[in-house]
Length: 320
Image 1: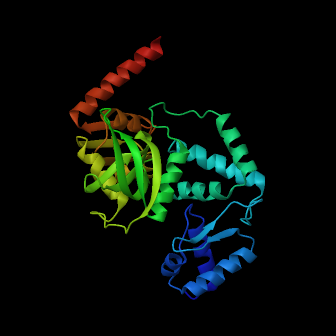
Image 2: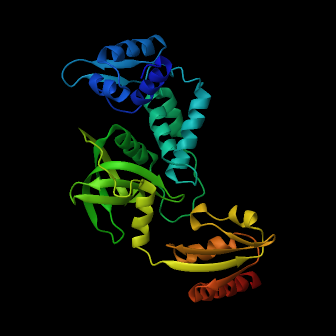
């Protein structure tokens, strides 16, 4: 990489991962010589970034928290606001807050001075978000530990509680974090089972990055989101749905998750959905009701029956 500004930005991005980087590994990542890495480290220090170096066979470089925020073009108030917002979004898996946001939180909290970390924790502890109450809330620190292990290619240990309540200890090679909108999942190679697995992050406790590095394996599907979708689908019965909506396709698509599938316009004021879904009957019924237009369910019969029961229940509630 001969473009010095671009190389410095890439180097800074690597150093903002909470781990120590051997000079040889940085040189390999950036395709330059160790001597060039040493010069670039000096340039970052001249710019005000506190890069710490340790000597010896296991030595390396890491970005540390200084007495003030590094020159990220953020003042204290902005840094606190961003950290609190990222923590809130990460902890409750709000749709649109994905792995990139978790990585940003890990980087930001690593370099926050202690006085700002205290302010972030105080604000976080003093507020209570309105959530769905389905038990999927997670500690943002769990996500940041996992995100750092993914980026740094470190083996990860944690305690895991399965859906039936069984508790086990796992050691994995983390591949990717994936958000489905309501929940976070870790896609990883399970060393104890010698196979790929997905883990619900809200069922993970005591995550610990061991420091042991690994060479990334090739995921069977090549895409973490696709692998997760397949894993979830294997655990659920498929639902073949056929629904007509009395509204234009643009209106309906804006109110349905993109993962449900494409809509077929039937004319300028109506459209139709034909899709195979690996979701619960309750979730599908709720999503259809939230479209906020007239619709007709042609298939499956059990969805028709469920909507009929739900409608009667809602009518009784309104009558009271």
